[in-house]
Image 1 (tube, rainbow, N blue to C red):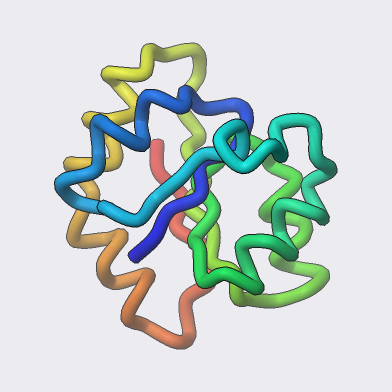
Image 2: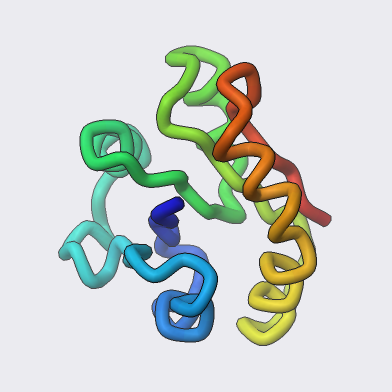
Amino acid sequence: MKLLFDHNLSPRLVNRLADLFPKSTHVYTLGMDQAEDSEVWTYAQNNGFTIVTRDSDYNELLVLRSFPPKVIWVRRGNCSTTEIEAILRSHLADIQTLANDPTLGILTLY
């Protein structure tokens, strides 16, 4: 599974999680850190990425447009990059289920 980290998450997550998600990237790396959510959505859809975000707008796009792309929505308040990394690592099985189940479009993590 390739993850596309949204602008509201640290670009450092790409390297920190490379052992689990080696083909992941960040919108900043793609020059899309100022892009509209709909543009990021289309990029993820066209390139086989799952979007990882803290932004509720992607949940709304999922309702309006369906999936793919799939979305991992991290709904934790202010927290560090280390905490975000730990959340994603601790939910690896859930993330794999999201990737493999064609009926699932979003995974909400707290």
